[in-house]
Image (tube, rainbow, N blue to C red):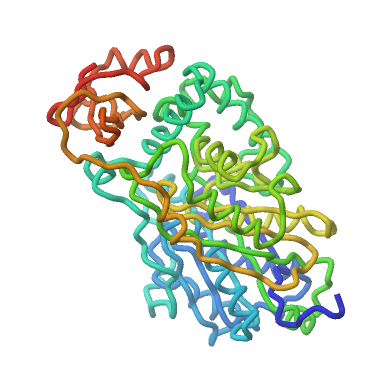
Length: 488
């Protein structure tokens, strides 16, 4: 690599921390996990001086009250003049901040960019259950030098009206996908549990995973005291697991800075190409609830920019908050659904520390690609309800140059479906989700298509229908919508 452009951006260090302290009073807070992860990343690079040489420290926002965690880290690491950045709430944020850093390094505006994140939701919930208050660092100011976009994650009128949470919407997507593919409810539960069992197997081999046992597909899909049904067809073991204490960090720098600090080239992993989709059509206006062009646009464009065919990817990590997210992404990108689709084990078994997950998937991807210059990896991130997307291609071999494209306009140009906020008349059920936490007694929310092809949403307060979901297919059934209620 002697003729490599010195401004080429390269990942040189990764660090991951898993905290399993049973006594919440002794557990370290997220800032401490971020610091340790950065120290591990510097050790991984064999270059501790990279930390004090940082000219930017970027953190994805978490479920903590720190106003500017980057400033605290800068002081702790001996880099007080480093720019500080805070990313918005989105699973696409980490890759977006990394892509921005790579472009700045290539342009000569940055030399060393640190990315770190952590959550201690397990310790926090244990303390709350005991009525205790955790003595965490205040870290209230000053505000960060940069924010990487707004914290709007694409929630619109429908999401607010029905107080929809991620499990509701992604189960809506799952049931729409199942119906489109002609799967019965039983076939669908079998298929998603087998997919998640494969991820559990990956996590069992991942030393940084939160859940290291590998439950069987039957155990994953079967409701029980420790695996309750969250929203059909998703049990607890089929959804992202945020109740973790985990941290991760990456060191991105120029090849010139890496050489100056003595990083061995065997540690190098190069971003080849990256994309962002910062906005997609609102949920009720999407042409299909089982097909999402945004993730396909982001990933396929990144692959095209890198000159890589999807079938030639050696390693893949699809953002895996719910099975529908993985299944839809694999379909849109053109990946074999039977191949390994995560390097960590996903957000259930690998662990889902809120917006920090992609730090873990990138760190693990680095470990898998090192020493394999012929191997190529793809990492994706999702924000909101498949509303924002990020994708990037990585290799241990350098690219001719790092390439980036904002694909938002292309994603927004996708065909849309008319949405009727109010409707009275006959309609057919397109998809549904359970509203288990509903206060008004309504058991289900249905997305319905009118005879003219418009979409409307309606609730159904039929407990017998809900109890029959495992054996009867509600999708495709005809009924009537009146005053926001569906009757079959």
